[in-house]
Length: 262
Image (cartoon, rainbow, N blue to C red; front, side):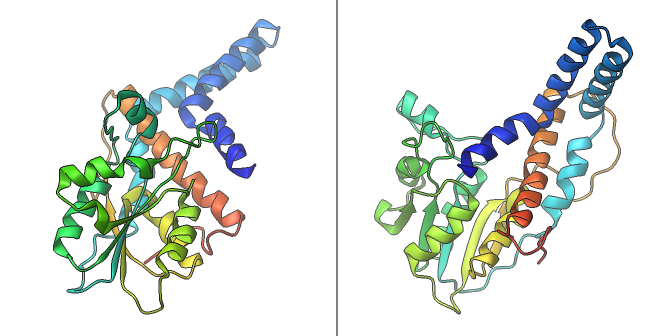
């Protein structure tokens, strides 16, 4: 039930949705006679919208997340590589009968590259359904076509297809792979997601080498003015998803620190 509640809460708290709701609510308040209060709400929503569109607000929020875990120097030998789901669109893939990837596809590109670099390492893809209303649409069911295209034998990759979130990724995969103390594992996910993912894997007593990809910002984000409505709001939404996730996971005890560090 908490999984569904979390999905609903994100719909309401997603900044782009929240600003739209705030503007509409302000208009309704103004129409029912509270003109001053309504105008304040509408003006606040509009100003926040313009700030996200004109200023690099999203980049400012993303930068601390993406810079938290630098790209590592990998050892000569590792025991396994685990890549977190989030790059495959299972609903679209099923509808079109062909593999469909999203903006997180660098996770799979890095997975393929490391698989070739470490031919003896165990390989795991972990990803089920993040859609509470379509649980049958699982990312793990569509990793096969990518492996074929990347030239990686399907039988070499273990697929964990039951997880719904990052907490499940860590717990289910650790059990599936019977991870032993002292083993060296590399974990691949988007840079902005890495702090929360590392915190979750640590909580599961599974230390991993973080391998961040899918960067959305440069190492240093300055002050620039432009006009990018869709891109600006998308960046703010992406950052808010991770910051709120860190708060929620810390409050629920799924991670031991609000902002896990190396």
